[in-house]
Length: 251
Image (cartoon, rainbow, N blue to C red):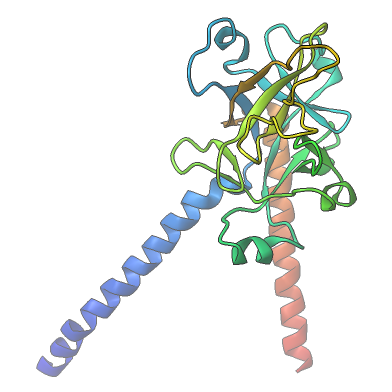
């Protein structure tokens, strides 16, 4: 009996260590669960800017014709003509190992593009540094990531930092799209949109912004989607169990 007690006492540290490891793993999984959740993107400004804060703070990021726009308070884009970004992180097959080897953290980024929930990849155009979306064939030739987010506020990052710029590409319509300042020079290098335009003697209006991941409203349609996904997962597990049982019987 004494020996049994002593053995139990000796085993306690190992049991506690295992339990803590399991708890730590569960917490890590819960912490990272947000990455697979479909979220919207809204605009934030790092510092208040007179004449712009009211216009852009909380503005929805939307998709249209393979470009990414800001649905600000005076946007010329009718709501029915655009699709709100609704996406999540997803490993990008051909680049994950390359990014990890270069010391980056993150994955690819996808979004639905229509009411049928078709998915496209988000990417940075190799030539212009504009944020765009498209099928894998379109994305592959450009910068597909890594996309990640800040640890506390979950703001969007690309290649480890926040370098997103709102660009007024059409002053007459007050149409603003989104770019990434990949070289950290205000998009001013030759050929980029921030470069001085001698023909007009004007500069393009640009504004530093943040892209904030925002949980989507829980509506009826979303509840139905989540139920369908759970049912599919359950049926998938059932099929795996049935296949495993059949293999066991054959052996």
